Length: 632
Ligand code: M6R
Image 1 (cartoon, rainbow, N blue to C red):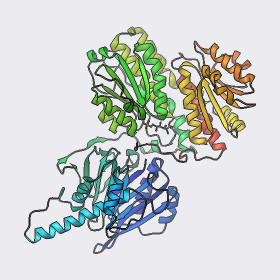
Image 2 (image 1 turned 90 degrees about the vertical axis):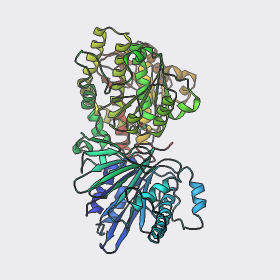
Image 3 (image 1 turned 180 degrees about the vertical axis):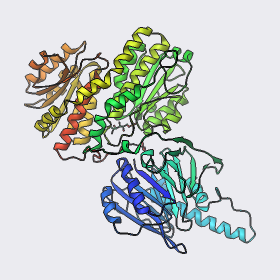
Image 4 (image 1 turned 30 degrees about the vertical axis):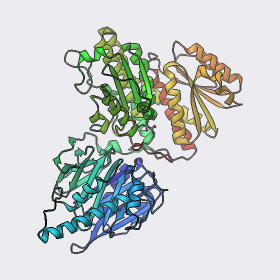
């Protein structure tokens, strides 16, 4: 949800900012812009370029312009207030035009602030963010007046870290309600960037001769691995030589500083036409990584961090999984494993609904919050609500140091590496495997599985990467199927039991990147209504791998075929009988039915990918979406 990138200490700011935004474009691509403090040392000035549309429009606009300078900010936008036009693109300029701001988030009291500023300033956009630029400028002018009073012998004027811009930003934020990650530059303080956050991510980068900031580490790893995640209600002052952090009360503090271990290549396409295809193909390795080193020296399964004690875990009597979108589907898959192996009741909840229905939570309720980014506002808020009710929260996330990871009592990291495609693929698979691990861990602590059974289950998990390689080999067959079906205007996905989340996920992926209407249904529900949608040749994709309810699924397939549906079945290798029930069959290797979703989801990802490319869609940056949703 909007990408922010900034640098102080490099002269070639135009190139540096556009390159930084390139790694963040997946966060929003309605418009893009940059501002640098350039001009001469004696008379620094603000230079601004912004364009509606994708980053390519900005790239063309900056071509040939002198955008060298001392400090600069860039922004890719996912529109909330105001349509995606040039004037609504960030950065926004405040005061006399020498100060610029980039913002990710929503100002909830924007109407009051707009009314307050109305008499004094002329607004140049429809955004809430521009108000922030003016507020900082107003505070900066007030500070200048205070400084003049000091010079005239009046009381001392207090500034954050001796920075007028820092203090002006701090005071302005004191008047703002809502969420923000923001950064400010001012031609009067040419080498300084001030940044602050509340509820939206911002990572600072420590370099030897330059300092950086970005909405996520993917933007920084080209320049530094020494990073510091700013926490909520913290403000940072960056100069080429230093990064200092204080809270919004002005007291010195620190963010969460750590070293990033992702490499630059991991965030590049490496010859694939799209990130999504690369990430689908990376799944065997990602699953392998997530399973690595999961036993302690006593042969006991462990999570990533020490958290609630064993005794407490044995007292857990209920599990809630909270998540959004694809992560929600991963939680649905995990429910089968937790209930079956750990014998605990599990409810899987859409995070944006969870806290508003007043769920019954207490110290014996385990809340598992799943989010690849660890920044999804709905999921972070659901986890915070659970903690307020004294329920222990375990985060399952791909991002070290993310808001969710820091807010939870314990963390289980998926180790998928950076995922750039907006459609989640490898993070989904690793989430499923992580929740399977959690199920086994709970079974171990609650002693619902014998050590031998636990070992067997883990060995099955360890076998998945090799089997995934075999599933990926179906790519050509799926591309051919997709070519034949791509122009249909409606797809149904049906399944039962642990296959159901894959039906929902397959439909979501297809909608998301091909813009084709698709829906997933429990196969048994078809006859209660959705079967009315079937017409001659309507494609139905059935997740029909080996399971104890396969015969029942075959009945549902027969019912839709009887009404003219063309059926594509994802089935288990060796199942020749299925050929009589389906028009097309894609085979995946045979595994335990609780693990089958890890394999059967891959053909649905590939199908969505190939349908989308057949239709000429922008696979990695589908319309209207953003990778990380940091607004409610
Ligand atoms: O970062 P998160 O896992 O919390 O994101 C949740 C959803 O926004 C995300 O899964 C979304 O549905 C994806 N674009 C699906 O491909």
